[in-house]
Length: 261
Image (cartoon, rainbow, N blue to C red; front, side, top):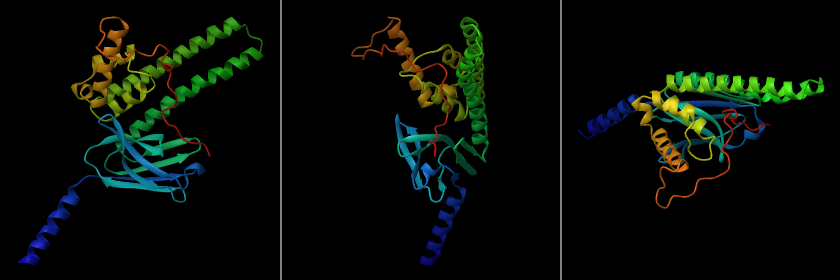
């Protein structure tokens, strides 16, 4: 009888283990700076960035695996340096890191996220190229006013394309982790929570699922409070003064940060 109970308990444990969802992240790196390093998967929880898994890079290879209580977007860190975002979901997630940038795929949400990141970074590269184009036009003896007018128009066009890309991606993913995750990426460029026309538009279209995401909800509430304070409509008791210097540029940097070899 005792042996039967042990067998029954073992079967129950095995059954629950087989039903539990899990994540599996297999990675390779050709960036020498990562070899021998310790990597972490970190997620924002209760306002704090917390490590949920770790592993070592051995001969350019690394691996994370664990139980998955919910699909979530996390960041891959080397020590305290964020390298790239990863969606933890069921399936075999493949991470490749090279000198020119990372790729993450193998599962639906990661494939979608990195198609977006690739398109976003292409726009940022076009924006960065404008500086080289300006130098070339100066060397060609083109009038400075004509240069400014042309490049300003091109920069405005790229900025509009970037705004449209981000807005549509968030709208298309209001009800999964990608919408709030990318919203966090774009708002993370600001020194403090602010309202922009893009953010106002996104929130006007947002579903309840998106609005009730903890980060989105907290950011939007803080941004509204800051807006009221800046316009003189509200001054909370004991509130710290807002910074008077300018916020980060409207055009964000590329969405991944890979150390160079």
